[in-house]
Amino acid sequence: MAWLMLLLALLGKPLDDPLVEAQERFRALTSYRVTVRLNTLGSEPHVLRYFYRKPGWIRIEFIRPHPGAVLIYNPDTRRVRVWPFGLDHLARLNLAPDNPLIRGPHGIQVDQSHVGIMLEGLRERQARGTLAALGSGVVAARPVAGFEIRNGEAGNPGDTRYYRVWLAQDSLFPLRVERFGSGGHLLESVDMSDVEIDVPFPERFFTP
Image (cartoon, rainbow, N blue to C red; front, side):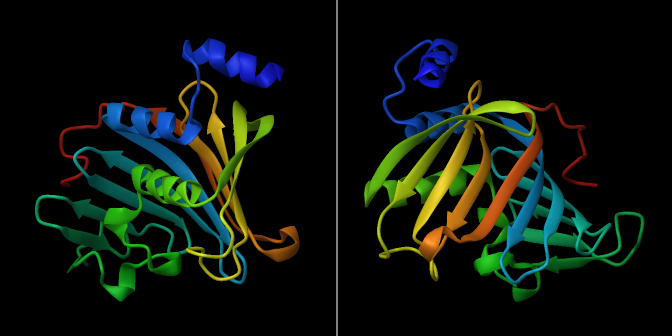
């Protein structure tokens, strides 16, 4: 249980529920940026740079697929501006978040793609099932604590049987989330690296 003692020491208080604590940390931050790698069984891998600033500004720069494409969600107008060939090109679209052209895997909308929504979904599944500690590890060169969420089949997409989430031991920011099917088969993984929290973005970063 050395990993748990280390985590408690870093946090300075008992960790009653790691996902609740992670949600509290998210509510306290003002912004973050991260490199996301999404691998879904049967689909092309996604690699993107993701930027978030409260109350809901989102900027996504695609590395793979669609290299150079940029999406920016404006929470005031609830619209998504899309530069298919990059910000240096005049071609631009103005779309609603639920437009099929820009919905992600499993129909995820741009405005619902941030870590706060991810944690809410994991908490909902935990509330219907169980949460078990997996121990410590390293993800993206950072110490992490792992947890497994099982809640049977109800409320799970497709063939999903359980989830594993790996939280950074210092910030409780999720660095890896994995979705498993029957027989322990990995269906999907989301890896986050280069995480920076409370980033002071340039003035017009979300309104170029």
